[in-house]
Length: 425
Image (cartoon, rainbow, N blue to C red):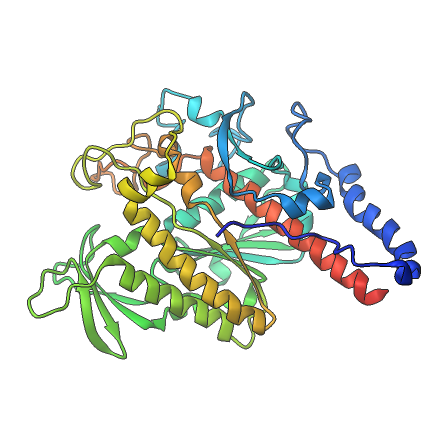
């Protein structure tokens, strides 16, 4: 599924609506032009790339921002390890000596338009007075830390995590006082209730129990407080899992137990997303915008993650659709599984007046094996020397996700403003 930015103003006014049009045109011009006079992007050296509000209505209607290619970009990244203190060691590739820099000099170019550069002031104005949460695993947290860095040259937040959780390592909240904006993460790598099932305790590859029809209350109990929710999950579903429904064991994945049905990765993945989406659509007090950020692929080569696999490439790759579906079939199957569940949930959400959007990044990031830390990141567990080909270097291609996010929120804001105008006139 490709995100198509819908037309902001529907143009349905005829000669019988002349009175409305007289008033609507000035408001439309104000909507499109005023933000440009108020804000400036830090990348003014590249004026050929617009801001979100510089897109005209026709272009916004036609542009599929997730269909395109990576192109060379000579400018420096938005930030680095010296200008942003939010980068954790695991993704701080510059700090720990990654020698190449070419991975920093590519931008995503949609086929039909330019993807606007990230504008921190514009973003903060769009989310003024709002609360935004990333729900999912550490790649979602990786995305939030990228956003923290992108906003850091305009505003620094206060860490208020301790006010909301005793587990401040996994449940983070930051408050931007100047904009009354809260940004946070709600840790839930499976979305559903889980527990350790390995007698030896929890480890990187220990077996776990998943209760696929029981939501993880750690995030579900807090979700009503957020206006924008970015939901994502993936890599944790590849570990050994025992799967339960209605309290009964229905099968497992890589558990190696006799007389237990062997289910594939996608069974648990599908059911977990179904439970998460149903929680959001059925929650009586949740009124927020939900954004699915699709599956983020890993890029281990010459071995698995725990068997010497590495990601040493230094530039994007060109992969055809045929190669994606053959050599990366498991990635595309994970993607198709969650998209199918998203589409069903979106139908139900629409009936209930909720907005469900999709940030379609899977194929885009599949082309960026150069963007991972590999061995240029330090784990919290200093005894672990596994290469990281799951998370993304900061700065790096993951910053593009915030460009997508700004574009999507900008378009939705314009559509909302247009809808309000139509009701007024």
